[in-house]
Structures are given as C-alpha cells and as structure tokens.
Length: 193
Image (cartoon, rainbow, N blue to C red; front, side):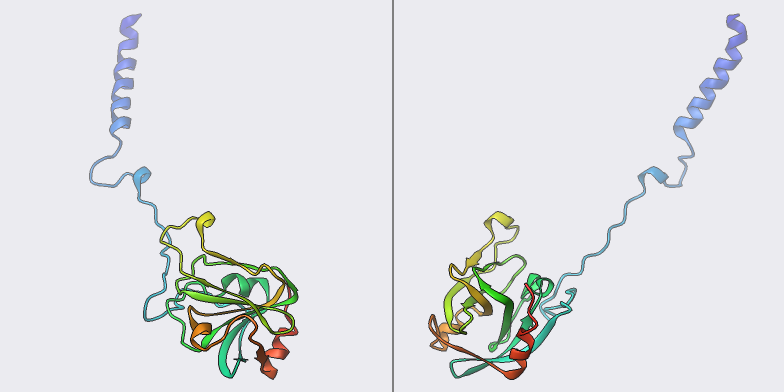
C-alpha cells in the first residue's frame, strides 16, 4: 500500500513546491504591492491659504477700534469660527477676524493649526473690549492638551483677532470701544451660536 501512495506523495510534493515559489520570476508579488496615499497639500510661504477651504460664511467688513480702521473677515457660524485664522503664515498689519455670536457668554479660543502670533480681544454686547490675551503659535507636534488657549472670563459677544501686539501699538486696551461699519452691523445680525 505504501507504494501506491508514493506517486501521489511525489505529485503532492511537486505541487507544494510550485505553489510555495509561485510565479516569482520577474513579476511583482501582488500581495506586497505598495499602498498609495493621498497627497496632502500644505500651505506655502507664497500662498498662505493654499490647500485651505474657505468657510462658506466668511465675509469682510470694516471696524473701527479707537480711530483706527481695520478690515476684518467675519465668522458668523460654527464652521467659519472653527477655521478662524488657522493655517495662515501671515496676516496683514491692519487685517484680522471678528467672531460674532448671537449672545454674550464666556468664550474660549485655542491656537490649533494657527501659525501667526495673535492678540485676542474679547468684546461685550456694549462693544467695549473686556480682555485682551496674546498667544504664540503652538510648538510643532503640540498635543491638544498643551495647546495655547485664551478664555474671556466675562461674557463676550464678539472676539477680534489681530497680529500680536496690534492693540498695544495703537494705544488700545481693556475699556476701548469698537465701532462697527453698517455692513458689519448687518452681517452680525445673522450670527448663529
């Protein structure tokens, strides 16, 4: 009986040998094909907003802080406020962003993906600056827990972000009053929390 199984064992050994070497030849093994990854576009120095999706509700308006006129992007909803000034490498000297809410409450901001040092002014319903906090961009690979943050500590309906030091350079601080342009007043009426 052992001799009858010998041809079968031989054929089985040959088949196993062929299967283990497969069709190795010069063709690549399909099981080890490299995976492809989507290329992530990062902003560049020459194009600070490249690769960045602009919020749907981002508009521009004028605001006066003291006698100084500034041009601000207006963030009216959670999507545009979530993006804020993130991923910018630069910010023009008299430009910034105003975050408008439908009510005044204690507000908190952080610097996640924000590469420009900022002054963050928390402003009440009465358009008076209640607090200004200066923040530096986070260190590379900074965890969310260690991210630089600012908190209003008092109710704020508006938050204005400008380059770090902007308010001090223009002699403005806590107690300074903002004056909205008509176009900004019209926009902030539509603010949603």
